Length: 128
Image 1 (cartoon, helix red, strand yellow):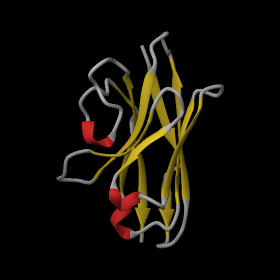
Image 2: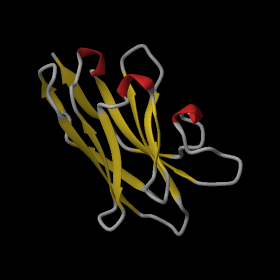
Image 3: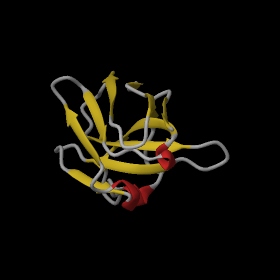
């Protein structure tokens, strides 16, 4: 049973930076696509960045391209999201997620929440 725990959220002024971390435990032998999502009240959860089991950043949504960087350190079982040049529109609860890579499923933000079976509890990011 995979468990994910995020940390690193907080309050920051526009233009500032934060780095989110997500520590995973309970991994099986499966290969996992990892992702960061965010959600604001009243809206659906949005995939913002994904990285496949080989550590290749696979996709970002347009609004974070060039500002956010997803990475993973499998030796530490940790997923990261480095966020630079933060904007008020980035204010949200951020979640990490893991999904077992399988034939026919694309590890990409276009997949949305489909295929991601493991979720962290979320960490709040406020930009103001």
